[in-house]
Amino acid sequence: MTIQQRSSLRAGLQVDIIQKQDQRTGKLTRGTVKEILTHSDFHPHGIKVKLHDGRVGRVAKIIGSCANGEIGPQTNEGD
Image 1 (cartoon, rainbow, N blue to C red):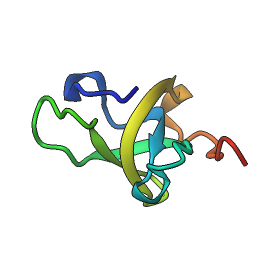
Image 2 (cartoon, helix red, strand yellow):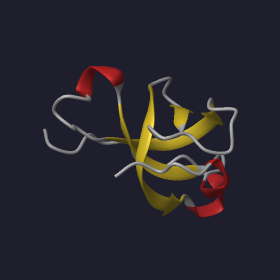
Image 3 (tube, rainbow, N blue to C red):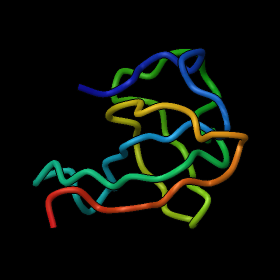
């Protein structure tokens, strides 16, 4: 399930995203939101974001915010 409401997201949140190349497998990539790329308030396929490390994908799950706004560890699930 993807996050479809832009209002649910903000920079600094730790999220799991699905990158374009991982759409078939559903592999999740964890990181911290740097920028929200989707301009509309709602998108049926999910809100696209850029992570601090430059990876781009649609948000599948919100993990939480990083303490004191610091960037948390970034790992890949399913490896």
